[in-house]
Image (tube, rainbow, N blue to C red; front, side, top):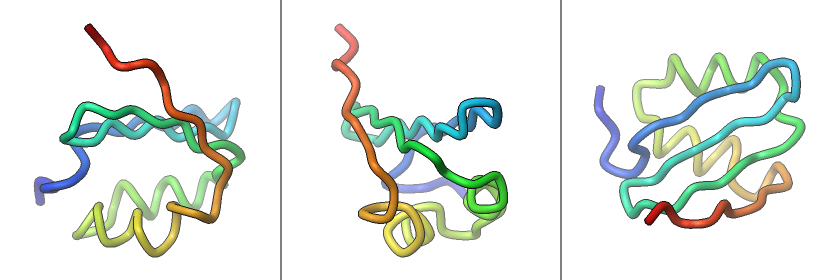
Length: 68
């Protein structure tokens, strides 16, 4: 199901980093995300709800510069 909050995400298993692009255009990297959490996120029916409950405020994050 398409998300109304999350446009795109990608997980780098080697670095344990989750890149999340929101529909607002803001991009964040979430650090030290376990592979099972990233997999569950990918399989979640509601990406936004899963993100809010399982990722936001649980993993250190940094915002990436906006794309021009």
